[in-house]
Amino acid sequence: MCGICGFVLLGGNGPVDHTALARMSGAIRHRGPDDEGFYVGAAVALANRRLSIVDVPGGHQPVYSEDRSICVVFNGEIYNQAELRDELVRLGHVFTSRTDTEVLVHLYEQWGEAGVHRLNGMFAFALWDGQRDRLWLVRDRLGVKPLYLARLPEGLVFASEIKSILQYPGVARQVDPVGLELYLALRYLPAGSSMLAGIEKLEPGHMMTVDVRAQTVADGRYWCPVPAPAPVGRASGGVLAEELRSLLDGAVGLRLMSDVPFGAFLSGGLDSSAVVALMARRLSTPVKTFSIGFSEQGNLDETPFADQVARTFGTEHRRVDCTAAGVESLPRLLYHFDEPFADPIIVPSYQVAQLAAEHVKVVLTGEGADEVFGGYSRFVADRQLRRLRHLPGWVRGLLRLGLTAAPTGLRLAACRALDMAELQDPARFLAWVSAFTPTELADLRVPGASVTAAAAALYERYDTERAGADAVSRMMYCDLMVRLPECMLSRTDRMTMAVSLEGRTPFLDYRLVEWALRLPGHLHVRGHQEKALLKQALVPVLPTAIRQRRKQGLAVPFALWTRHGVDRHIRRLLAPERVAARGWFRPNAVRDLLERWGPHEGRHSQQIWSLLCLEIWCRLYLDQDLDPATPLSAID
Image 1 (cartoon, rainbow, N blue to C red):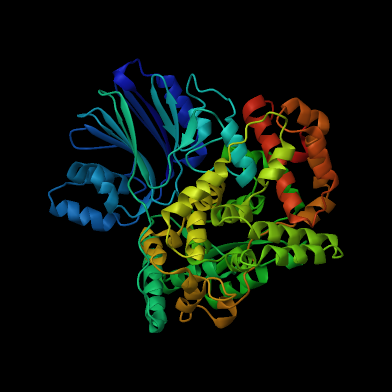
Image 2: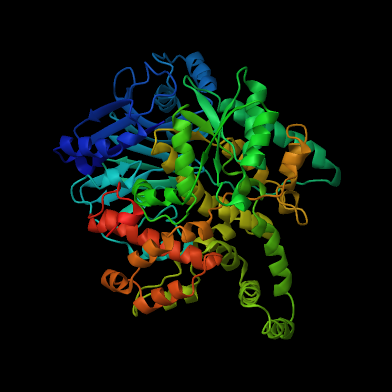
């Protein structure tokens, strides 16, 4: 687990800027504090920051082929490295270390770029082929590991984080209007884009080849998880559950590869509990587990459930209490994202990562299970909206009329549901997770601001990829391809890497994902039950009380934070004069939003938090007048 960075000059035009490479590497030291390595050639420069996990003494990077014509810097883990190593040895390759990075060198020697299909892991790597003068950049299938790119007239710059790319001369800090629009719609920046013009994310399941001699850059997709649904009979539920359990158990087993201490994040919910249970079956010592508590707001506190799981499986359990004081670290957290990121879950996520890093260097998580197995309540609720959509227009009109005397909160929620019911499927899938609707965005932006419906186009793209599948399957697929990589996985990567901790995600083993995608949606979301098949598969693994507990999900206590004065800081940072100076939004629109804000109103809280995180990011990355260590309350 590491951070990587570097650049390649098209046409071989030098000289290579050694000092720029050193600055780029230094900017991501937190991703790999254990070691640093460089390769500098006539047309390429590569660097690695290493967090030593496997082959601690022998895994220095870059790693070279025997004749040193091939050079690799790597971020991630190859979980099937032992299997690949054995095969390559049989084919005549000689290894000099136990590191999985060396597997990439021999894999490329044997199979070229086609070797990527043999990898099972989380990875972003850069491989330089000195004989062909080609740089090969690859990101894992589901986007667990990040890889940013900047295309410049002289070549291509890449890194695990944007802050590294910004150290290269000529990379501008100019906001991309489409990136701003995507952020306001989604609360994060999806793959293929970024907040800064000229910088992009390599999409999950994609690779890029830079040919120095031909002066070309080719981007291609090597993994597209859109298999046709498999035929499933009525009596096949038990067989499918057994297959799922076997695949998940194997995925957990593969991710126990480590030469350093490891543990698990444990919320007490279905997903993390399943991972801990399967770890406990395989290990001879107690699993080290870590959880988040909200003692000040009991209805959000899941620690009793995490404690129950810990007792059941005999884990060595620790927990951290997240209070309103944790919000003070928001500037530091957003600094680690390099882009505005409006999920307040990063506050407790960072705190539990800090706790875990005091005891282990690797944690397993339950991330991805909701997207792969249908774990969100909106998957159930969307079916109700599809039924509303088929009602005659006059019936929907009567329903609206009947809501006029309803309490304000109920009326607004019901009217929004009726509005969403009239949307086409991709637009409705987006509406479930968007911060600002197109109408709200138009009201917020200053006159003449560009609005391109970029987020809607993204959902239409992935909905089309699963054309012919049922609505639940298409909705889950959109979440898997859009929201999972750059929201859920980005959150895990940045908050663990901020404290030099590695996070592993068994539910995102690509074989398990491909298997799940072949099944129709009704097996995952059955009636009012989310994750129906997964729960069935876990019958022999988890006690009934844990398996059937109502999903709570990690949430933050906005009402509590507001009572502790966080709202004062928000109102100060979003004051009309500040909004006007930024020039993106109408000050009156932001003021009206703040005046209508109640701490229990979820959508307003999402919108205001989005604007707050955007303003702090601007201070960090555009104005560059804010030290990341500054507490929220001390920002002037």
